[in-house]
Amino acid sequence: MWDALAKGKRLDGRDFGEQRPLEIEPNVIKKANGSARVKLGYSEVIAGVKVSTGTPFEGLENKGALIVSAEVLPIASPHVEPGPPDEEVVELARVVDRGIRESEMIDLEQLVLVPGKIVYTIFVDCSVVNVDGNLFDATSYAVVAALLGAKLPILEMQDDKVVDTGNTRDMPITTVPVSITAARIGDYILTDPASEEEACMDARITITTNEEGLCAIQKGFTGSFTADQIKKAVDTARIKGQEVREKLRGLAK
Amino acid sequence: MTQTRNLIDENGKRTDGRTIDQMREVKITVGTVRNADGSAFIEFGKNKIVAAVYGPREVHPKHMALPDRCVLRCRYHMSPFSTDTRKNPAPSRREIEISKVMREALEPALMLEDYPRAAIDVFVEVLQSDGGSRCAGITAASVALADAGINMRDLVAACAAGKVDDQIVLDINDTEDKEGGADLPVAYMPRLEQVTLLQLDGKLSQEQFNECIDKAISGCKMVYDIQRQALMQKYFGNETELKEEVATQ
Image (cartoon, rainbow over all chains, first blue to last red):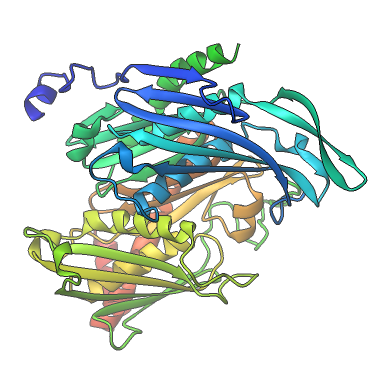
């Protein structure tokens, strides 16, 4: 690893700022309102959107509810055991959720049926099917791709009951958030770390941007960064993020 | 987050009367938990948080022990009475995440390799919360670790900055966190110039982000001085001596 890095290359031949091949396949699950399978290198995630109704969150009475969750399935790696999520998986789900939520990707104000009482509830559940590093970005892209392609059932209130009209429309999308994760190994900053790079990284940073600027950041793992390293990582995240955003937007058409 | 009212008035004062560069009042008392190997109580604005350190001690369960270094374990917990509406005492997903980032924020400062096969437990209990509790908790935990005599490379000081009414402000409070535009908590080792915790939720342009992180780091440096003074107060009981030392640096 060190020999390769000293020569300016990574173990799999990539440059420091280069992402692994990204494959996005929308609408893979017909039973869901929207779905996507994402392969980032050998990391693979399936996201599914399910729409139902419920009561709004406290303090957000005039907005629909959006809930993103993630699970690493036992089939995904020999190191995963079934059971309640450990703190890494909790962090994964919360960081992905934060990126989507803070970007205000979905205009939740359009998803209210009875103000303060009944709103659309949109669940995006992600299943990690194969682990090869950087689950943050793979999961985030799966969520965004699933939402971009999702069809929202048009619901109506009739005599205090929610009725499905049978018609659908597109999700009210306002922006496309893209997360870019980098790992620091010594003084090297590597975009989109694979498993073997994560195994020897000192620290990790996940930066979510939209068209205008930053929406969310999470530093992870046990090491640290200098302020300059962070500012450079933000630069990379904006440039790389734009490339991925065009790819995601292309799918929606 | 959509903003519903002005949080900074025409005189540049915030909801709690502070200016945009002013930190809430911070008070740290060292050694407040008698049974712990190290402890600290911090009042950060209306936050009241106690941190206690046990260890280095034997690891239970034993298979968690590492042959070459110490295991660091962290628990961030909010008391049911610490919030406006009662908080369920069971650990929430938020608390699990904060426990993790807190551990990762403290670990770079600790010389864990000095205590192989042992464990250090850090418990952070939020008795009253007021926005920025993770920063206050890390600040207190770091002082408690120093109080426990753990070998350290530096203290970890933490402070947030954020965006309120399109202005970048230091140390955002509960109202600003809930109603303002962005929150950027940062933990920093001032002597080593390393950022050990960084989170952002909310929208910032790249320029605003750069301003925000610089402001948060300047806040961390102020917190650092208060941490050092609190430790000096316990171990030397003379604040003036420290002030002279700080002045000569």
